[in-house]
Length: 197
Image (cartoon, rainbow, N blue to C red; front, side, top):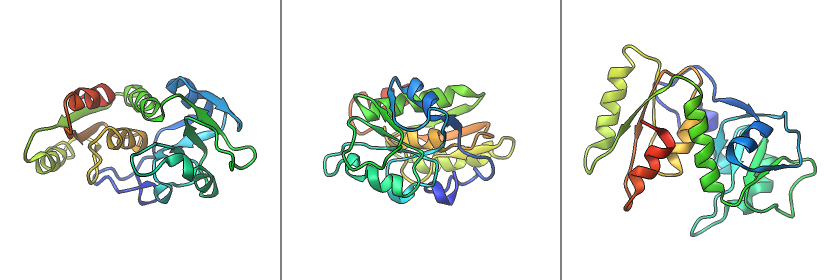
């Protein structure tokens, strides 16, 4: 993950985020590609247009305060390669590629898991009530002595953050140390299903 794609993953230097086509991404997420070219390359993903770099997948998430679908046109103005949506926007540019799914968050989880399973990546999950971040930092520092290692940045430790880490993880990483946060019953199980530590 580079500075242009979001918060830097310390220890991740080098390598690029996974490359896949819009058609392959649609297939992995169980979605339908509408518009665009199925062969168009995608590299990385963002849920915030301010973190979007050209060629990335914009994931339109519906939140409690705002709906990412309201920012789809902005995502394409910033160079998004495709947008993951539950509904097609009326203000989309001509020729824009959309991957339509019933639930964008669940589809993003499926994509993250598929990307995680592509290589021989070892994922270390760190969870607990106290000390997750410092333990993650120590574990990543130890792993980095022998392996090309990445760690989850900042607070990317939720059902949105973990898929972002996996979608933007440089392809040459051998180990990823991820912090997993619990915000309610079943939360850790959900995160484990995504990242398979």
